[in-house]
Length: 140
Ligand SMILES: CC(C)(COP(=O)(O)OP(=O)(O)OC[C@H]1O[C@@H](n2cnc3c(N)ncnc32)[C@H](O)[C@@H]1OP(=O)(O)O)[C@@H](O)C(=O)NCCC(=O)NCCS
Image (cartoon, rainbow, N blue to C red; front, top):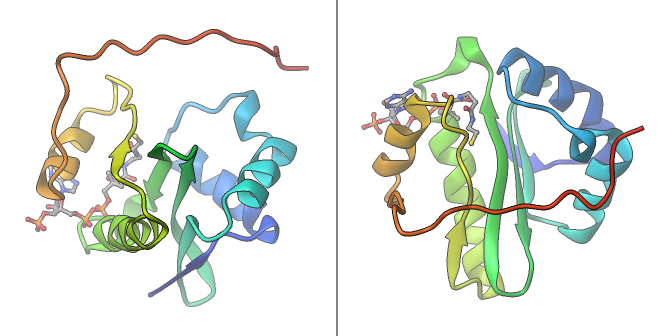
């Protein structure tokens, strides 16, 4: 297994992985939107590859203040072998090298086991924050 940069040519494989992992997909996950994410965040969007197949992916983005994590996913048949941990370790290493102070992200409540995974990686659950959002652009 090796970890490398998520390239625009990986889009179809990663989208198929997201679907197999039952992630909630939105307008932000369409090809053009993901390509913009990759252009704006060179080096912090990653895939895990094994025998030429994408078995994991994560998108990291830095807004200049916080490092954000989106859509960490590992192939259902390849879980509990350290792939998720390796993807996050590489992302953290790259964020640290860029000078990122803190990593923040959201977990959908329906993704229950994920909080335990992140706890093992040293992340803390925040009870003092409520996420808010406003949609600026609707899908086609
Ligand atoms: C969460 C996810 C990425 C973990 O990937 P993974 O490759 O199986 O994780 P790892 O094997 O690196 O596990 C690292 C540690 O977390 C633990 N862990 C992993 N998944 C866990 C779970 N569901 N419940 C409890 N612990 C878990 C492992 O046992 C391991 O612990 P250890 O180091 O003490 O042995 C994977 O389950 C996944 O893709 N889930 C569906 C997609 C999803 O919900 N993504 C998050 C969107 S916010």
